[in-house]
Image 1 (tube, rainbow over the protein chains, first blue to last red):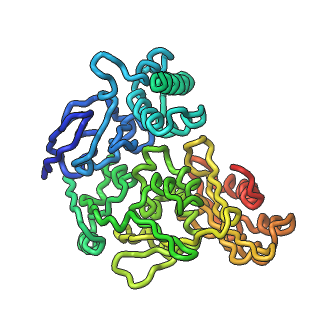
Image 2 (image 1 turned 120 degrees about the vertical axis):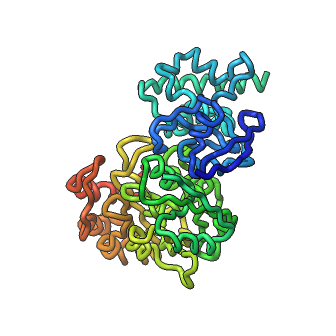
Image 3 (image 1 turned 45 degrees about the horizontal axis):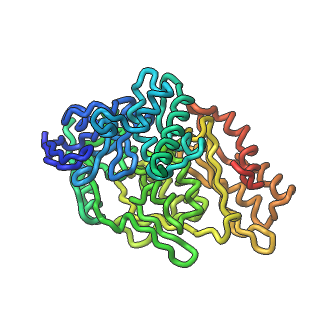
Length: 161
Length: 271
């Protein structure tokens, strides 16, 4: 099977990988370079647990052709924390018990990050809309929404401080 | 099955590549093709990508506007000239689907998907195909699309509604904000002197492809949107249609509720 060499920026670092033609980005992240944060849920773009950011926009890694990220910036939930310091979204998820089984969490975090990057003071409805593509099998949506709203206020508080 | 990927710079080159291989498919945003690959489809083994930036353009021209096939739902929502289509694009998937899914790809989405196509149908969509001298009507395109999955769409040209009131869209789904269509309805109802002239009404998930509700259009033509005009349209709501039964709704149910939702569209009630 033909393999193509690609380079992209992965959580702030230059990354090179050989990708099989037709491989999806999720496979390359998990099996290719060992980033296990994005999860394989449905492979159909329905559940959102493989959500990653490509050039700052949310994308479903399972539906993204791996070779199409060549030269682009890919961010996953493993890049959120700075060393041992959690990202405010991660901290808020912990504080509000927003992860039950945790499988949807990496996707939720990335979908929420896009929202907060674009809209630092979202309404509850904005959060619901932003997370609409992410399914939580434990149906624990309330704490997740609360956590995102809390992270937003922590982030804006930090900015104005 | 080993997959091969070919990247073409121009749309004509892509069309030639696709014409030469039955097992090739155009790769647009990936939400349909990648999905099929992940399911282990045996229908194709070659993906053709097109890098031509012209496919990502949106060009207003007089009372019409041309949308490149590779324009994504997120780009539709961000484009000022496409403000009237933004609420339609917003009904497609979640944000991550919208940054990949394209307008061109939506034309190929099997029922009950393809809500944007419903809106384009009501807005007199004309489809520009690679290698074709003249655009074809979206209606004609939809009749043959399933037989010709290797057709390369370059762009869709639609009417720009004269005023916000003239164009209405409603997607009916059981799950909010992201649910699959029980049905979707788009209506272009330009008024002149209080009367509708050139009514175009389209349904999604009410047949094998998005389709026009011609009986409703005939009933509305020359009428005003008063009680009598609306009653005439509702009486014709499902005339000539054979709605599908799927996991979301039965044919019977779709038939029963179509007039309810059509009435809300005609009254322009907030969704």
